[in-house]
Length: 117
Ligand code: SF4
Image 1: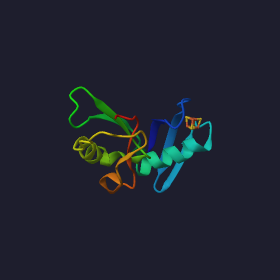
Image 2: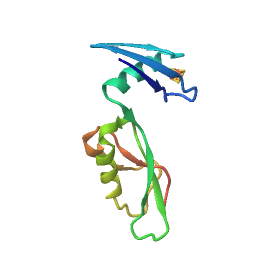
Image 3: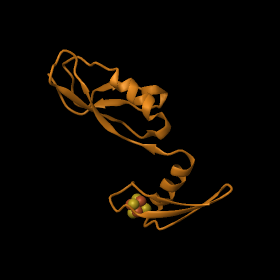
């Protein structure tokens, strides 16, 4: 079975052709070895990072942007989003502050990306 995927590791965006034969995975179209690692990860357990915004408790118009400290499995996105959106942080919040440690048992933290005093 062959599958075409886009490597999103860097802005070059190589188009990869992944051939899967049983336990064997071969990759073509990559310009560096990260593309091979990415293709294997996409086939076995796709992972992504993301950032979003959440409301700040007691602030009517203010939103706080947050990011993940690392990638999480794609299949856990909705669980992680639910945990993040249930968060109502109070000020003061400092840039780089960990708002959720080990979100949804992923080993990844949710971090504030700006300071709100
Ligand atoms: S294969 Fe390498 S060069 Fe191509 S998009 Fe992925 S990381 Fe970038």
